[in-house]
View 1 (cartoon, helix red, strand yellow):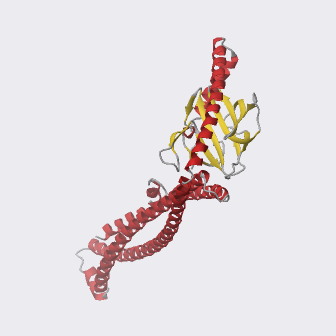
View 2 (tube, rainbow, N blue to C red):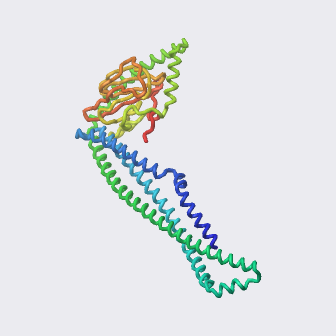
View 3 (cartoon, rainbow, N blue to C red):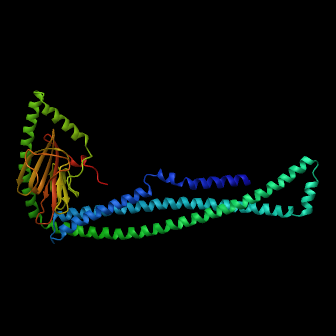
Length: 403
């Protein structure tokens, strides 16, 4: 019975020692959750900066709405991170409670066994009884065995006392750990309540802004038409340049020239970097690829051949890959545009105020192309496209995912 309890104590203590590897097998560790939380806080700071610049104009604008939506999204992600941390702590607290329960059960058994041993020892401690027990042995060999038994019994009693002390110390340590985890959980619960209040306030602000924008339907629709016309003209220029490049590549392929070999290698290299490209500008996606519902106007759909990246003011735009500048052009409503060829792939950067490159120039990955313009509403936004020949591709599938 004593041996069984001792084995169980050893097993429980081994579980404590192995607690870290067991946690590491969970979907997300505490360190990962805290890192995720910090990333969400960074996104909040970025969105706050952009939002403050648009709201400074004291106008109700689509740029402000986009920044507000991004701020709300980051806030929701932060709350999700906090909930995950709370859930993680709940699991830890449950496991600790189970462990404490097991330790308490073992402590009761050990104390009961120890009490029995003390009672037996007390009876045996009588000198006459001990001598009678020893000298009543039938042989010298039996006498030696009885002396060894009494010695072993005494040692076992000491081991039992040590085991009780070890379990009590472990129990005390586990109680302190669980107290710490409960305090941490209570702090997170308070943080969750605070962040939820912020979220509700942001959503109220968003609803108010949408209602105000709905009243500007006429001017918003006119803006959409102006931009649509500029994009049609830009699309025409892009297709003309791409057609010329495709014809040139076909001639070089037919002639088996070295230029065509370089063209093919550049295309393959670009393709190999799918989902690895650095963003051309810091910010967030304010309008996605393809058919998108207008953020404020019902039943209005916008077709986008790329993505719009809303940024802080005075943001510089960088090339995502090395290539050759094929066009620099200014168009009303969208500002300067730069087209860069990367073999059969093309990247388009629109919405620039200043351009740092020129047609025919060879540029490298990460080279600054220009400075984004800031419109009258305080919004700075890059229109970014990736094309394989004339086919528009979703840039979000090519850019490196943000943490």
